[in-house]
Length: 271
Image 1: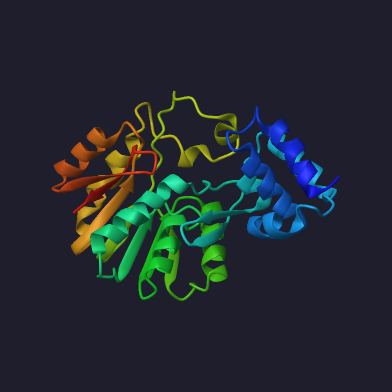
Image 2 (image 1 turned 30 degrees about the horizontal axis):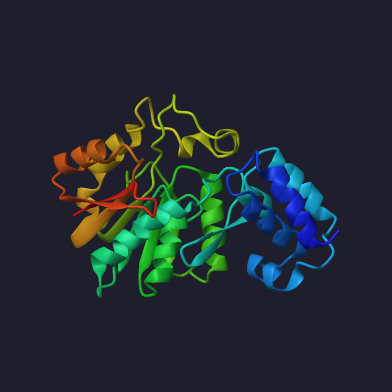
């Protein structure tokens, strides 16, 4: 069977598992062939499908996330290693980088703090955007920090970034031009797809009954860390703009909202 034929069959098989069945199939086939998805589509559709593809497909049919199967996820302008125990980067989170780029315009932030850095998603994307910047990433998960350090080295950023274990900003000193954070914001009783609920770390997803517990802890820590002219950019759930804006305003921030590509509230910019 050719890769083209296997992709058609696997897309049909994945239709009940994923809203992006064809994309999932292509990413898994590319991984099995050891090439990028773009190279697969341009050069290898008529190659024989590798035997390993069936195993990868079975894992996806069991609702394992594609990023955990392939071990990588693209985000902004970088490619990140990911795996069990870390939150998978999502395109919606690129809204935070877009908001930061819009805030700074022709300026460049010199220092960047990423609270809840996970595998380094936001911080390393920001450092790639601003090559002169230095960064600090904080996370409570040693597994996530191991991935973040590995990603920084793979991207050639090892000398520009530090990572430390911590509880949000407690113990962090200094001032930062840009503070980024994608805290947990799912209510404990909200329903999630099985591939998220059963595979990604609960500590990176859930934040109390209303999904606001981590904002309540995090936001009061931000103002002393923000340099003049800087911005704190927080990811929010689509229904949380009002509640999180109120928490920021109570700490003296002026708040602006940025929507994601679907038009949903996704990032708050506090200045």
